[in-house]
Amino acid sequence: MARAQLTRSIEFPAGHRYYRSEWSEQENAVRFGKCANEPAHGHDYRIEVTVEAEVDEQTGMAIDLSALDELLAQEILRPMDHAFLNDLPEFAGERAIPTTENLARAIWDRLVPGLPAACSLRRVRVREGRDLWSDYRG
Image (tube, rainbow, N blue to C red; front, side, top):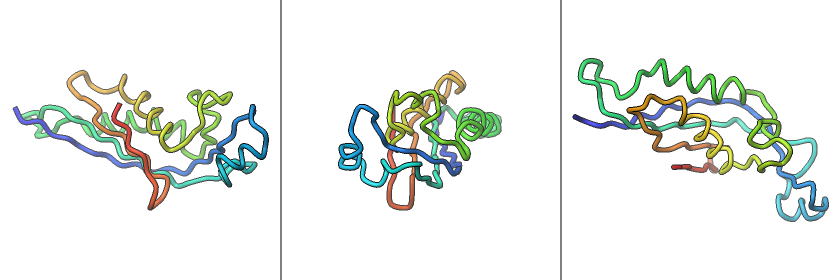
């Protein structure tokens, strides 16, 4: 059987702030620059999700695209679109700083349980802008 990878891209705006309460304002400014400023700042995020599976001989697809789209809507778009990322469970209470790298990992962790058993997640790419992105591969 042939295996194939499929990448779906979605976009949403969201805000975040890099800040550690145990550090002084000065230390936060030194470590995070403008990203530590209150109240926060935002980006138009582009998320690229790559999955891999055997290509179904009857449908010609590695994954049901409508099922993948629903998973992306449920786990990424609905909770993150126009959100303050620091408030998400993965980041709330300064559990982690919502950097591009940590957001890619959080998205990975949200998607893996909802994928069909025969399908594997290969990459989550989070683009914070034209010239900045992070890839996470589990």
